Length: 310
Ligand code: CP
Image (cartoon, rainbow, N blue to C red; front, side, top):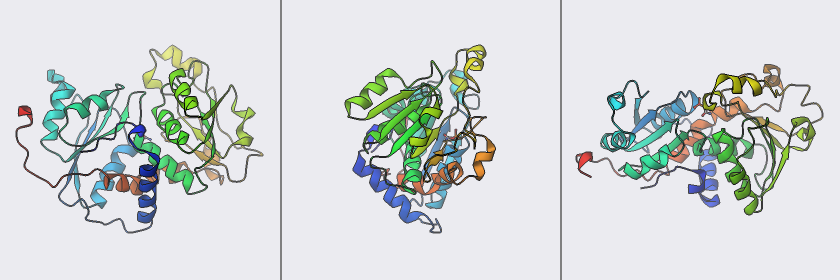
């Protein structure tokens, strides 16, 4: 049984294998029966459009099915049931669980109680490993990952997609330029870990300083939902915005990515520039999550014993 909680759970060879597999799937009719009879449980305790729908789409295109729990309010957790018990119970109903949860560490905890593989679909400000795979895949469609120069722009403190991506890029000897509003810098522990692996991490106050030196500009939204109050959010909201003017003179092959949703950090006029790849990036969730699903080592479907007796 293989849980995928952090991008660190995959080594470079495994990541490359998933990306190669996704590439082989891309452009096919996506109507495999590889997971026929398998059931994926989607437990999303935070809002999602892309992750949830693309996992549901990916399992359906592999011949499997999904069932979902959409909110704490709609579940017996409102009666006081713990996440641990919820996961034990759902393990009895499905062959793998995709979990999104507002608390960092929730997916790791779930994996300790699950009898089926758990995929972390975002745990608070922690990690979002499947997003990283499709981010890498989208970069690789334009250029080799090895030695790529990437600007991480935005909320790098709470932005889990940036955390996972930075880890993954360190496997490819990338150079990382981090640009964030004051107080939203990459956590120092994470920056230290990256530097310990030999990754160059260079901090900037303003994206103007570095945008012309980048191969990839990875833009993130300010994670308003993680702020303690609205006042502290409004202090930094709208402190950066990618516009066609900002992108004047950038490298021809620059790729602008964003995990989405965007709020106002990318001017819609950028959508029409050749650099904009964020909608292709979200569409890449299908081949990448199909390829990723194929690695889950889901056991043949069996009738589960009472999960509470584990
Ligand atoms: N990129 C991403 O995680 O989007 P959703 O929140 O819509 O799933």
